[in-house]
Picture 1 (spheres, rainbow, N blue to C red):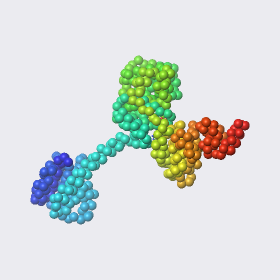
Picture 2 (cartoon, rainbow, N blue to C red):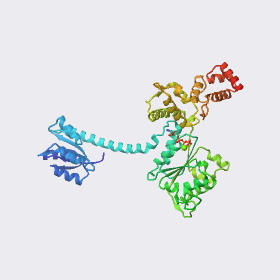
Picture 3 (cartoon, helix red, strand yellow):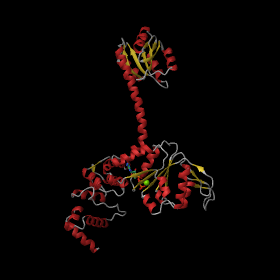
Picture 4 (tube, helix red, strand yellow):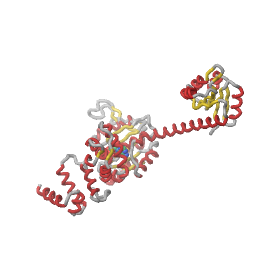
Length: 459
Ligand SMILES: Nc1ncnc2c1ncn2[C@@H]1O[C@H](COP(=O)(O)OP(=O)(O)OP(=O)(O)O)[C@@H](O)[C@H]1O
Ligand SMILES: [Mg+2]
């Protein structure tokens, strides 16, 4: 404990002197005989701890506590009183005193109280530091993940967020790329700028260029006004280029230039405009293979992947399925005005064994399906989407949940018949055309399977 400053306020000289003597080894001690004197000291010194008598001649120590507490850096206050009653203690605490001790003073007791008070304050300071840390983590707090793979992603994000290094996030649809981009921005220490998002797919090359770099008036037909682009808008912040794999060759060249020189030119302009932008790009393609095919510039790829994060598909981190489901159960219940319900064990098993081709996004919508369909006290397998239910069947029939389940991409149109056909085909594929095994996998008898195959072939 560092040597703190202590102010003793008492109208009796012998108490002041006695306390000073016993505490001056550990504190920088100041004394005052009345409120005016104490105020002076509080004004000129940064006091950590103030011990004051309740009765200060005709004055009241409570008033002094109140005054001290209203200061910018209030000391910890300890009240001494010969009139120790609960009421006085409560009153003193209400005014902000940390503790009170009764007279005649027991110095040992006072020392203990003082030390405890100081320790309490140190802890509070630590707490504040911790809280700030937590706030920094807030961005990651929303992102559920307890698998080793996600822990590693979190670590990397924490590590790289504060830099200005360009980040490339690869991963299948719905794996959380955009969420991670937000986290990188929130932890970047570039809070002055915002996160600007550009979806690079679905814009014609010309529109994308003007979206990114802006254009001068008359740069092309319909460019009636000058327009600033997203790079300029993101100045001081982060620019998230989503679906970067979709950008055309000419925009790739321009992007390469920005990454190198940190300047842009508006379309139809020739002035270099400096931009201070952190770039995070995402793609569900494998950029490396696009490079190999000649569809993406190699030099741009290398610039982008200064730091590369690969979001693992959900089926490769099944540990995350349960905590994610729990989060989505809560969120979806709230959003849909439904009571919060648990999943049955069987439903959980189905969720864990399904392959999730649409990853976390698909899981979220499966849970929402469950929450909305449910009107019993727990969400059961029955409430889950068909394809997830079938995964549960695979499990129930002794197939290996990691490899044996039948997974299909969710269907656009809900046609039971075609879906059934597809499941049957898939089951036969998986079992190498073994009808007995396929029937088992589907959870139906061999005869039913035979019948269905016959019906289907007659379609
Ligand atoms: N780890 C996670 N914790 C909580 N929610 C998540 C997590 N990962 C993804 N989500 C949620 O799943 C949905 C899809 O995530 P996001 O949009 O970030 O994925 P994406 O990889 O950008 O997908 P796409 O490639 O289709 O654009 C969002 O609703 C997101 O909030
Ligand atoms: Mg996305």
